[in-house]
Length: 372
Image (cartoon, rainbow, N blue to C red; front, side, top):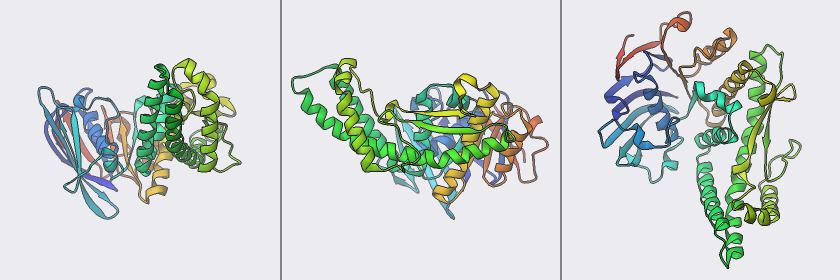
């Protein structure tokens, strides 16, 4: 799959923009704050239904404008899809081939991207929320129904937490209803996360071994607040439902005292170890960066296995982060089989990697010029 074209209207610092991409490697070159990342963000938005930089869609609308639009033609499974997102007064509407989508969750997954950005280091050294989001965004691309179950879980969780803070005379009966909803949708969330990790862990470990020349062994584990989930027992939905229901019942008194729900997928985490040692305590920044890169490159292979085609690879100003020759080689070897869109302030680190089929774009003050 690949992005054929991108058209922006009143998006970020772009009044109007239309560019056509190479199916191979595309490079946006320019100083900081000129709009390179804005173009990548628009492509990410079309794949994920949201920005990776802000939770406010209004931030994507050009200053002093009330509307904005992203349009693109993407080539997926041998056919062209026309994707469009319109922003208007705090709301957004998406369409595929001119057909409006009832919900954004119906739109997500039309094509897939993997984004590697400097902030990915937070995947390793940041809090568990960022790691849960990494899993959720990946699953949303390859299994759109996951987003439905996740949103329904979050809705029930919010209602349950509100009830726990403001206990009413009939709270016990209401908690029973909300617990049933949490178990129904939360078990699906857990099942998909565990299956995802089961496939991701070996891919990421192999890539890390390649980068580190076999000196260290990376292991991933899912810290489940419902109950420990061992590799010896394949994920089973009925078993997860039973464990989750029992955990909610066991923790109800503690939840009432705390005023919020203390067990469930919203409390889980993704753990990393190197040679059996937790990375947050023992890994250097270089090792943490290599783990983050291994996750993103493993994500590419996992998506290919799930949907049958490689995703689009977005590299947002990370060339300076890839200070190891093997890491850069690994990324650019990957770019030989996936469409790659790169932003950089300098071509210096790309000079020995550029090939004849690379398309180069110069970015200055919200204007992008194709320079070959």
